[in-house]
Image (cartoon, rainbow, N blue to C red; front, top):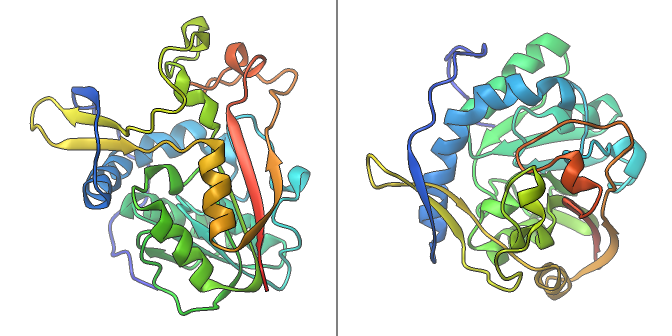
Length: 283
């Protein structure tokens, strides 16, 4: 595993967000990676300060609705298994896997998020070995893992998703398990607004043109997100040799009033915000 250096791992003051404007246009994997890695580095401190208590230092939450892996059981048994988390952030989910007897490992594009993982390693005593890398080039030997998962991590930010899925297949053992959560694809139709404006469809569900934010001061791409329909995800998994066993669409729980970006009670009571896939690799 790569070393993350000796930079401080405490939460810092949050820098102001740079002024940006959004466009819809095609973008490459290289551009997506150049934008999203630094974006997560900038946002990591605020993310952990804002959402850390909800996620838990040793916790596995599949999405803003708060559905946990202990409740959902999408991964299956993790004890004694080698488990890789893509887009692991500070490693809360992998730390949960280790607390249940699994051998959890983390991978993230953001150096700062991984530094927060080191902070939580020290705070909890549950250490998650982690590496800074991309989902399209996993730095592991073939057949290294029994389970690969991604909880609202890397997959929406990857342009070359076929390459990422092929990498998952490569590092999984025969019969291995792949599970991931993403923003529910139907949300692409709506503005990313937690209020009632976020309930009015304003763009086509079938328009797969990436969402791109551009820094007004530098002209550089600062954020990229990619959209696939439910049918796209089914075709990707089936085409790679997976048998889909789960598609979970968590309902908004009673008494849950947390607002997280475009997720809220206002929207969550009427339309799904998260989709969780579970699939097994054919032997």
